[in-house]
Length: 510
Image (cartoon, rainbow, N blue to C red; front, side, top):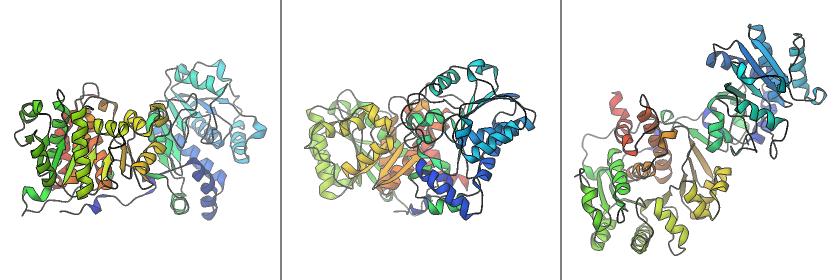
């Protein structure tokens, strides 16, 4: 088997995510060690905001700036001043008791006030009249739900047509979880500083963030030496290509995968999983399904070996290197019996498996169905995760990091929680995927992902690496599939040619 150890990049600060409290505590220490005053960081942040404004909204001639009471409010004052100096018409709304501002924010406000431009009350303006709104209203330290007048301002901005660029974090968003604190700004762009906050890259937080920009304000090298990151965030393009295959190879070198599912009337899911595994390079793929589905699964894909009787299943379990179970499995007696047989075999032989869809639902319902420890990748969507954790979907989505960690710990597995900003958790470590798009919200997309993961496992990739690489590969294939055609109408099988292209990127580049 080839070694896949070197497909990860040399990590930089742009790959690490942090809790807000870590950034708040370590930022002044890092600045002090580098001999940089905190007000200098505020000036740098304001300049970064202005540069992002110019880069993303070069047409903007008239902007409104919301300056709150925190340091991001100070950044807003700096950005407003710089924009004014460059001939932009700036309307600034203040939301803080000036006397209670921090010394740095007060200094930034004084520099703005020296321009002699009066501030404007937010109720007196129509946000749709402006080219851009710069949101420096609320920062990362928000506790509890947003209250008036901030909630009223947020609602008015969101209901307008003005594009919003948020400073450090969209106001009203929990910086650690990405959950909405009652109400939150829906930004088109967000520029965050020093360390990427965990809440910006997954779930509803990812949607509110829009396009994420990052600036370390010149203290990044020291900061990352002092702070422990909460996890990592990767896009597929951050990862190195898979190693080239040796010329002297045969199909047995690239793994034997068994795909189990496809209960009566549900042939499509397991067929998509199996074909995705083949497109990702698995050498040999067998499918076990309900007898009524054999012809449907095999039709049009003669490379698949399809079976339906118990003796063939037992033989295939011993034959394979790894297993996928769950796509189209159903939850009836047939499904429970087949799942128990597969789980018992994996436990006895220490064989890696991907557990998805109805296999997860059955495990949540029946305590006799036990996942073998340290041998499984589970791939729930939030509803399935809620069933496994015996909680509501809303609770899972409120803190996706906590949910996926709990899944990994409770079931001693590698857990992959699907959704915007898919997360992988393993033994206290977290990885988040930057790729993906709303077009993926369609039937069969999870079945294709299971096939990707199973195909990588069969080829000798470890559980954790298969999950991380597979989620990025799958999501980036979806991004390529919508290019030029749009997100609506994307089919899960549209990913298949792009999966093949991406796993061969090393050869294509030659």
